[in-house]
Length: 481
Image 1 (cartoon, rainbow, N blue to C red):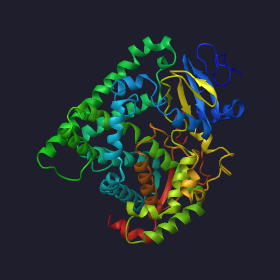
Image 2: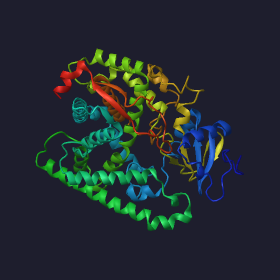
Image 3: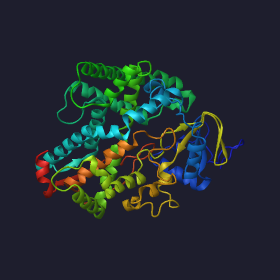
């Protein structure tokens, strides 16, 4: 054990030079939960030269994001934020201050407010229906086995792109194939840099190597993404100047604000907002959809209850709509329970202390990185009865079930995820359509595995492959999509 000599939280002994970097494995969040059982809910680690404090209890989180919310409202200054976050200027990486507050206020009121989300239902629903039509055609054409990870990724990407830019770059009927291909390649490269931190962020001796190799690659990608975003802005501005056509998108709202406040809503800031939303909104959702459908296949009784609920409230003569969601208690419980058991980011996005503070009676030094172990809290047997079992009914009283900071998938405090409402709607709409329209089963005779490929993110180790069969009661609806 290492207790520190200046009031640091307790923690395990680290290795010379690398500290506790050797702990970062595929079971990182679970290993940290075991350390919390041994040392307490606030532990100290060191990732190379960077001090890290990990919190693993609701009381410690409350202390972090209520009493110390402003002190801990910054993000760590990592190379990816410098190169691909517009030098820490976009929504995801900007330090707490006037610029971040203005961007966040716009996101809350103009992009993610309930009234705005209701408007964008007209964009999301056609994309989901198009996806269901695609599955229906495949299954009736003899291709009943579906590799769902790629299908979910394409769908979520198109939903997000349609809302943000009024475009679709994945799947069938894609216009501008070359532009779509470049966007997909750039996005894959971006995800790689996000999930693979540069060694120089933690070990200063590697910073020169990062500057010669990793940083240069990031800057090349940043220029490509900037040029792409500028083309979208110029193209959409021209459409609006000519009277506008088609369904409105979020970029329209940003350009409208530019007319009213050109000093703040510059093209640069608009690009930063759109880029941050594109970077954050895809992987986490398709991870959750994979887990949710896998859990339902393994728990057919829950699948039947959700299907009966959909049949009662939606019927057999139309597709599910967003207006139906508040009535679908079982479906929403499935989403909440999936996110509890398999949070897509089990360690949340880290914070950084802007000045010295105390958490759990221990001193947290300025510059320390703060990590919240969401997985540990959401599977803690002291907080959840039978936490390893899939029980959506525990969310029948939603606010009571989530209360006390024991369900914190979207974070807490000032830096909590602004798109939580949109994410929950999308997940419920897609999963609801899949349950309502198809019967689902495993692709082989073996029981579906639930192995986790965890770390900083939490996808399934093996991509989900399942067999879908259109429900006879929905054939007429599916045939007319």
